[in-house]
Image (cartoon, rainbow, N blue to C red; front, side, top):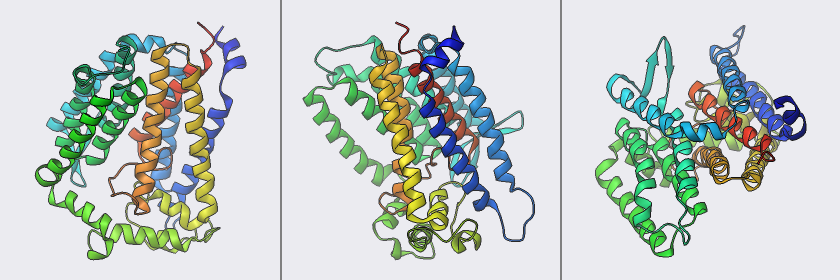
Length: 367
């Protein structure tokens, strides 16, 4: 029965786009990790292949379990990921000023990445159960607000502002789609603006405030906090239309691009493949998002709709935040680029989310 559904309803277009982005990500990561004169494969390339294989295996497991089973498990999964965030605060190690890494059985991972899936599952279940006819009022937003404020607060305590921002944007996306009363929307916008001001003056560290200042004027500290963004812009501009060629990016090979295998992986791609290569990748991302929206529109019940929407929000906002940061359109936040940036936790989370999309798409005629 599963094989018959797979042949007739499986979304092959989404799978091919996912595979294409994974291949592009691995090819680009090989260049980012390779040093001229070095023989063999860069360590990060080998590690990424292992993480991608694990991610596809997890996506396969998700695919062959009816996604409605995960509705019953949504809250337990959510609280399990919350436990992971608490464990990070107690036992985690600090990397680049953020205490968001946990080591278990010799494996180092980011529970904040897995918390994204837990949050989306919990929100999808709640929005399926609770259906206000005229949209959410301010009072009715209190319970769903708790679902996002708990993980966001724990992640903020750990110092990861970029990941915390994701929870805000995904929460807003899902609530707006579910429907919200005008008075509640205006109140939330005003509260959000006030929260930004309070966070800037009382919660952000001097380093984080410096990132905002650098976004406004990167030339104010060209050898300090402005260095990352300036070098990224030089790499992007030097690629011109068709790029300098694979493995020929001078900014990449001479180590001028910082964090080039994670936060600035797209700058490496643009330097070597140019505007043309960047548009190909953005076209694949756009197609993936559109397919995800189509999956949501054809899902036969609300949990599937909101789960699809949450996964697409996960992918869309990470793309916007990462690329906006390296181009100087948004402050740098350290958010990874889906399937291109190095990072096992991120890759597994994205592939798990895509597994849910394929699952929902394959079972859209089963009701």
